[in-house]
View 1 (cartoon, helix red, strand yellow):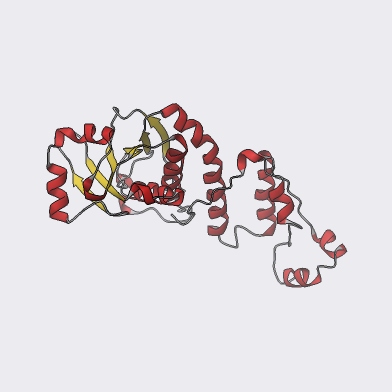
View 2 (cartoon, one colour; view 1 turned 90 degrees about the vertical axis):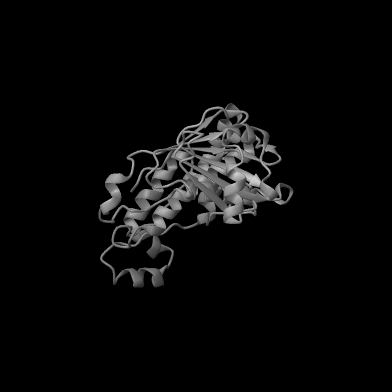
Length: 268
């Protein structure tokens, strides 16, 4: 499976690799973004006019090899009206931004600033969450593609923001959510001949390191509880059945640091 990109935080002044910025309606940019794009003059507006790009939420504008910035690519992502954006929208925009980073790019910088100004720590964390989920891949069992040699072994994505320390602190808590989603996606994507009951139980037991309470019922325990229907189905399989008696018990044991009342857009 392809390694996840290395995520970092940096001041607005440091630009590396593909640059992704955000703009509101009518190409309205934040202050830091305007400074970064100043060397381009009116190039962005001319390109936007040619492509009929106005900054509508979710739309994008690509400018390849802007020589004035000495960067391989500039991507502008529209946010629409900032006042109408909700937390889930910020997560989605992070996914869109990550999706515009070419597969052959080894570095990228995503500006954590909307037209209304630089994002706060929690907002940056939501943006990173969307990017992290968008970058997810499951290619463990796929054959090597012809273009794999052109892809970088490691990808680094930095989020330029007003307060990198606060953003990194906020992301530390949100990263647990991303890790949980990745674990769930991996379990869903594994084929049944790999993720048979005993293997599922083994992987679930590893969550105990995070403070999750895990209890797995073996055949004897299921017989004692009268779970004949499940055992009857299991008799037709080569793998011995296992079952968790209560998912509620497991979730109740998750430490507060790994729980969140937020409902990010998992399908980013």
